[in-house]
Length: 355
Image 1 (cartoon, helix red, strand yellow):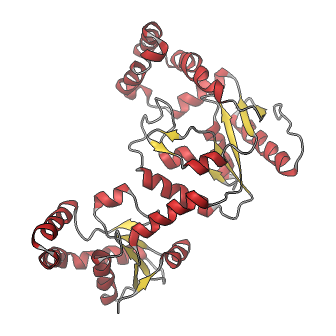
Image 2: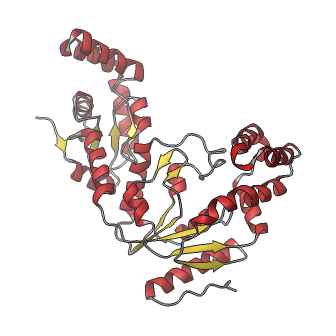
Image 3: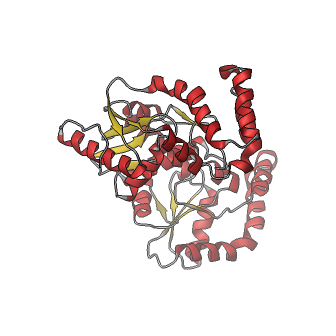
């Protein structure tokens, strides 16, 4: 009898820093996995496709035997990779594939034979995915305080400062690997797939499950190409928002700091500007393009905020909100913490700057 483990026990091990190993192909792992799991693929993408074709055309037995022939020479390397990643942990390694089938069974057997205690996850990644979907369909989160404001206001920077102070922050843009808006993907690489975005969000929420409240940044349903789960997005609308405001000078400085390599991003920026023609008209976009070509970054950013971002986002200012004014990001973080304390204690929020 081989050793198995159910999802609840596996996630308990995960919280205790046990090693989770996804043995699916690199392409499957890239699409979505359990956060924190490493990928030790039993088969490459091409090998998996080959075995799948054999299964369909010649049957299960032929496909299995071909799988053995492919996997057998790799066993020593599998053992070495997992042993190295496991380190000094005394917990069993949790191994999974898509449905808890032959791939994870084979790897679990290899590890136990090599003296590395391992358990096969019953139901595989499919069971984890079902659990994540159920979580976002049914879970009741604590109060969620949302920082809102115009582009460049420094919401993400303030969230980062609060997180460093130990506050229960959900940084949706970090999880989605996108800053939002037409320029939000510049310099950040690929976004995670939708399933992986949801898995990462679940993982962060699980880390904070004992917190009396959560703090996040105001977002539309979509961050780049990723969608915030509907019920979580609805929960973000329930509490009075904190509307942040500061000078155009500071907003411009924040944007310049967020995009330090603008010179290298000229073609991508030009493409993004061109996509705004229908909204802004050819004349204004041509003017913005001229500022780009002459590398007048400060004026370009200010004009983009005045002409495009501010009109686009001013309508998102909620009816019920607490306004927070500040002259620096450090002052803004302190003002947000003061406002949160007031809200938690049921007191009136002071809305001026903090000396």
